[in-house]
Length: 292
Image (cartoon, rainbow, N blue to C red; front, side, top):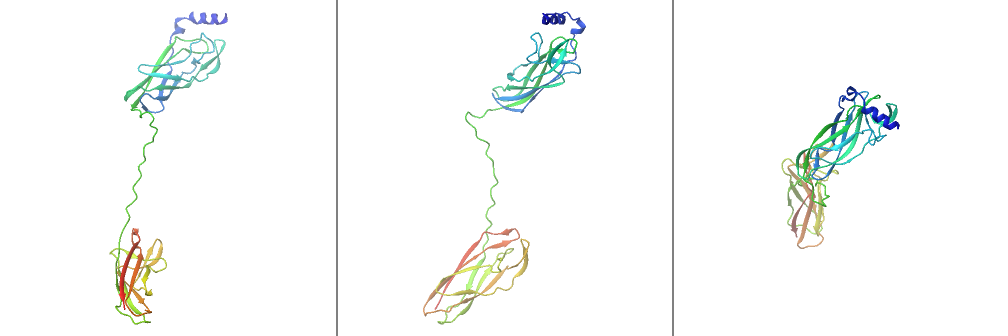
C-alpha cells in the first residue's frame, strides 16, 4: 500500500517538479582504440550527476524506481554491462540504493566485422531525483571512436617476430710472414735465422706476456725464438703494453742437427693483430724449409 501511495505521489507532482533538471554528463572510454574485427573490447561508461541529484541503482531497491540503464546505440553491439552497487540514502522517506557523483560502469562491446574507422554508440537512460522528488525520465547518448583492424586467421596465436640486429662481420687482417734460414748446418751445431713479420699499416701486434707469437715447429729440428727489439709502448685496454708494428724481425736459433742428411722443417705461427678498434680475428701462417 505504501509503495502505491509513493508511486501516486510521484505521478501527481506538479509540472514544475517533473521538469528535467540538468542532464548528467555521460562519457564512453574504450580500453583500446584498435580492435580486431568481430572481437570484444572492454569499455567504461562514466556518469556524473550534479550536486544533490542521484539516479537509481540497477537493479533498483523497489520495482517502481526507474534505474540507470546502459543500452547499445546505432550500429553498436553491447555484449554485457556490470552495474556497480550504489549507496543507500533516504529518498522521500524511503531508504534507497542510488548512484551519486561520478559512477563508472564497466561494459563489453563487440566490434563490427568489417575493418575501418567506426564509432561505438551507447545510450544511458535514467531518472534523476533529489531527496524530495524525482524528475522526468530522460536519456543521454555518448560515443567513442575506434579503428577496426583485420582479425588474425583462426588458430594464429603467434606473436610478431622480433628482429634482431645481425652480429658484426668478423674483422680479418693478416701479416706477411717470411723466414730467412740457413741451407746447411753441421751435425751438432746451431745456426741463426730471422723470422720477418710485416704487420699491415695501422695495425700492431702484442701479447700479455710480451711474446706476441706462438711458434710450433714440425720436423726434426729444434727451433728457438730470440728476443724481439724495436717495440713501442702503447696503452691498450687501460694497460701499457709493448707493441710491434711495421716490419718485425724475430731472431731464430735452429739446431743442433743430430744426423747428417736433408732435414725438413716447418714453423706454424699463431698471432692476433690489433688496431685502435680492437682485435682482429686470430691468424695462422706457416713457413717451411730444409737444411742438410
